[in-house]
Length: 312
Image (cartoon, rainbow, N blue to C red):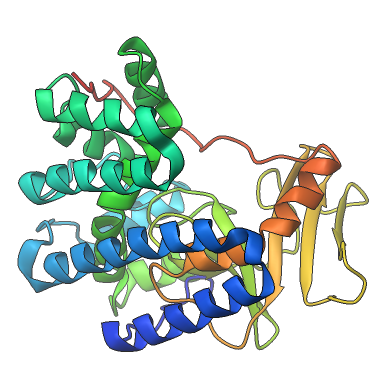
């Protein structure tokens, strides 16, 4: 079916897989050693948050299957527009910790300034987390710019902190619910995530199934049509190319219609949360190849209805 549950692995097994992949990245790309070390520190902190959330910090939501099915039938992601509470103190503290990691890893003063603004209350940590969970890039960007902070950095630290919540919610609301919700998930054929509405980070082709992998909550889903995930172009304007002819297992899906691209790799298995970030780093050369030919990634779709979240 289009939504594909990803096996929930013990953290020890996830860590073993992560360490193996980081080691291979360092060996194959010595110039990425510092970036790999930074990512390792960030993802280890994400895994700690994920463990804390799974042990009882997950928000309790009343989202009946019929209600979610009706949203999906209207092509609206399940979590979009829902008033989702987040474990504020835990995640707000993690925002500052992620800033410290990024400052030490090269973000410098931009990360230090953001941490100071959060600690001083100039940026409301709960509001930043809520805006990110709602996939509201506009609010985060405009709020950060208004305060003289780096908007992309604010978005990154919020994603790192609240990503474990999004992943837990995705697994919980879609886990084994029969009837209308299962039918709606089976009928989902959009290029954006059925849980949170994010675009995929890449496609993992496993056993000849092209699984789109959410960049945020790590959901996996398969479309019935082979077309651009962003604009649904499936004609001559849409093509799949291998920048390196000796690596046909690593490809780009490019669309001249909307000017966007998606990375695709052949994989033995799906990457568990949060190792999609490692898969993204493993394929950075594909991003470079796409951008060299003037292809890009579109902004997130806007599913907001009504008032916006404020950061201050």
